[in-house]
Every structure is written in structure tokens, then in C-alpha cells.
Image 1: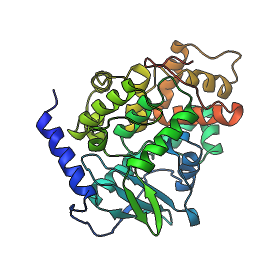
Image 2 (image 1 turned 180 degrees about the vertical axis):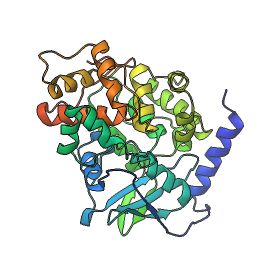
Image 3 (image 1 turned 30 degrees about the vertical axis):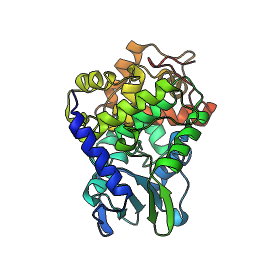
Length: 330
């Protein structure tokens, strides 16, 4: 059971940050060295087509991000480019080390991908997808908290409508970070959601669930490193204890928020449709077929799932629909 005192302290910290009382970190540079194939350009292109990110392209091939790192109340801005490794600069008042760690996880650079080409050799269909989208790794939400917020916002409404609401929340409630003169707004911090009274387009039940989410995240229950360290079934069970988070949403948070690299989702119907296209099947395969086939994808099952999703979207334009709290497609 989360501590009311800890949530209250997080709210106080958020209010202090907004008032300009937070300690200001200097801009910090870092470098991430990918192990295995990686293309920042491919990840950037994926974000540009990913409605929940509402990503606005930066100039010169740079990737500009704004987010609240796990355990922080202030936002970080990050500029990324790929001359050789991935070079990054951190702006804003959040801890730069926390920002760096979050970027590394978000871009799946915390995983040794040197064995991923071998998956394509074991399964030539996957090899073909790797050739079509070279260097593409899963690009997640900035945090499990933000992934969970998206799941709650898009409950029973269309994705485009949910994306607009999420973007308006960032515009009205999020912190502005200047990244090389490019002003970006982060999604509101957990402490800000913990005191949310209402928001246009969200009915009372969603607001209540978002408040509970803010409270949980403010005391570390959605920390990405923590979720990744737990046995997968335990992590999913903990996530489903959050109000409004069902089977589909819990997998979304673990795969797209905490960036678990090796999970075959059980509640994503588009996976079977993507597999039917990739393997030239007349009908989407059943679960046992997918389970057997995916043994060749270990330990990168999440990475292959992303390629199948990208294939489905490229071939059919299927970006997904609205889902209820249990993950059923509407």
C-alpha cells in the first residue's frame, strides 16, 4: 500500500519545481554505444508515425525528446544524434543520469542486440523484415508511467482522439524544456496527475484512474528498472492492480514502457494478423502456432513483434482501434 506521506512529498516537490525552486543541473553530454545493429533514423521515423507520441520532428536528423524521468518531478529535454554511437545532450532540471538511463531504455539500447541478426538467420522471414527495416529496435514510451497514462486515456475512444487529449495535457499541464531553442513540453509529472481534478475530454472515472496512476508512479511503483527486474508474471500482476489497467494495458506498459525485450504478448490481436502477412498464411495463426514459431525469436521476441506490427501497418494501414480495459478490440 502506497504511503500518503510519500505522495504528498512528491506533490510538494512538483510544486517547488514549478515555482522555480528546484536545483538546476547544467547541460550534460553523454554517449550510448549500441551493441548490435541500431539506427536512430529508423527509431525517429517510427516515432513520427506513432500517434501516442505526438512526435514533432526536429531539424537536421536530430531526435528531440521531453519527458519526466522515473523518480523525478522536473522534466528533462534530450537531443540525440548518431554520428557513430548515439550522442546525447540533456537539458532542463531533471537529474541528467536519470534522463540518460531512461533514453537508453526507451531506445532499447540497454539490451545487447549483437545476437539479433542470428534470429534472422534462424528464421528467414524475420531476416527479411530485418533487411526491410535495418537497425529498427523497439522505441517505447518515455516511461512505464506515460505508457499507463496512454492506456487509461485511450480506453473506449479512438486513438486519434486519445492522442489529441494526451497532447493537450502536455500543452496545458506539462513542463516546457528548451532543447537547442526547440521548446518541447513533457507529459505532466506523476505528482501533477496525483492532484488532477478534471480535464476536457476525460470523464470522471478516467480522471480518478489517472490520479491513482499518478500516486502510484510518484512512490516508484512504475519505475522501469524495477518492473524489468521482477519476474514477468509478477510485473504484469502488479500492473493490473492499478485501476483501469487490464491484460492488454499491462502488457503495453511492460513492453512499450519498461521495454521488456523478450515477451510474446498474449492480448495483442494485431500480432497474429501481422504474422499471417509475414508468413503468407491464408488466415491469422492460432496461439500454439505463434508460440512454437516464436521460440526461434528468443531472446528478442519483443523486437520481432515490433517488426510484425510495422509490417502490418505498412501493408494494410492497420494502426489499431479502441480497446476496452481488458484489451478486446472494438
